[in-house]
Amino acid sequence: MNPKIPADVCLLLEGTYPYVRGGVSTWVHQLIENLPEFRFALFFIGSERKTARKKYYQLPPNVVSQQEVFLFDRLPSDEMEPKPLTASVREDFYSRVRNFYRAPDHEAAASLAWELFDWVGGHSHEINYGNLCRDKEAWDIMVEFYERTMSNHSFIDYFWTVRFMHLPIWRVLRIQREVPAARLYHSVSTGYAGILGALASRHHNAGYLITEHGIYTKERMLEITQADWIYEPQSRYFDYSVRWRKFKELWIELFKFLGLMAYRSADRVISLFSGNMPMQIEFGAPPEKLEVTPNGVVPGQFDRAVAARRAAREAGPQRQVAGFVGRIVPIKDVKTLLRAASHVARRLPNALFKLFGPVEEDPEYFRVCREMVLVLELENYVQFVKSMPVEEIMPQIDILVLTSISEGLPLVLLEGFASHVPAVATDVGACRELLYGRDAEDKALGRAGLLTGISSPVETADAIVELLSDRGLQDRMGMAGRTRVERFYRQADIMDRYRNFYRAAARPPFAE
Image 1 (tube, rainbow, N blue to C red):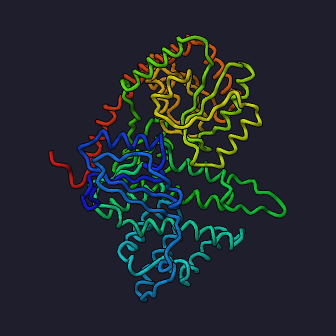
Image 2 (image 1 turned 120 degrees about the horizontal axis):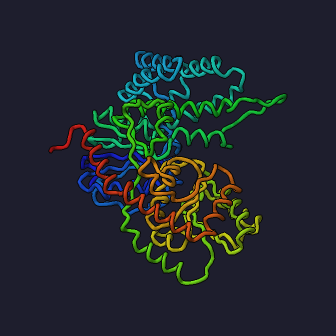
Image 3 (image 1 turned 60 degrees about the vertical axis):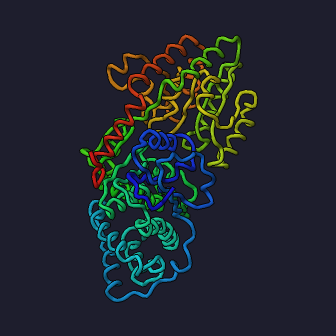
């Protein structure tokens, strides 16, 4: 691998491939493998280097370079010591910062942000993060913004919140020139990867695509509203009734703004299902740039799983197995699944829940889940099983269960359908159209599972019991799922669409 070879496509990967298994990472790996005519550069964006752990994927031969940055690592000392600024540099920089923070709304701030970002990109050798932390002009701008927007809150809490928020943005501005040259930049989210894609495409005069599996801004909003790492001052005399407290609002507004900037810079914004489009438009995506392209699978790869599953089900009496396949993390809401399992166990004593997937991403959440199994007395009903190829998982289960609070288009449902496995899933993301069909032709195939509400253990348990108790219903729904995959979600068709997206957006264009 020679990192100096220019790439056709640079993938901007925030917190995903190749360090996280499943979901988005599986899709990224499939994309690279199925488009061998394109040379890919990988640019991984993580939080801290210690969280990167090991790589879970062997990189295909058409990956020509790989780089990593970690936005929240400690800055080197020379970056924290402010540089002496000439009068003209000082005036140029802080007038742009001041204008940006005085913008009345995100729309006005967006154009001012490009003036600021372009200036920083051209003067990166003259200024550093230490200037933002220690220059009097930076202090005055921070105080002015505080007095205008947050004067009823603790200044010291505001100060450290803003300081921490600015660090990753500054890092992104500094590393934009480290992103390898490419004809096209493709980020698999908005957020930090999205704004970096916008900066890189602007710097290299290249094309830019965004593919959102879920809506990044919405997912960050969910995390932030539940976060305990963002300080929330409690009033001594009363509790606020506002939806979000002010310090969380700052983070939410940041991610809304980053999303807006990325959307406006992209040539196309691709989502996995049409239900995402209204929210993308709400967060600033121009409607004329939006495309819908789902995930896909190769149905024939699961034929052996179909045969093995059929043989296992015909072998004789066995436990009724509900399977979960995914990361043990809060967004998958495994706690609701365990609560549902408790209800199911009382009604179907022969039921068994097998949870397949990595547990190392959030060890504390996994620890709580393990404790719930003990507290709910589910030791004989719940098994945590190490990750394995999905083709080996499907013959072991009767139904799939997905209790996520947010999803895009879950690839595991397509893999289950290709294996004739029906599903119980929360009504999030594309789950409704996957289980029930997207249009009249699709719906005529029949249902491939049952939908439930978010965080609804009783409703989830009812659906699991209904499906586990009826082998005939399982078979009918499993067949509907397989037919749906074969007709609408073939991987070859999906990859052809990305091939066309790349050729249309690349600058300079590919030779015919």
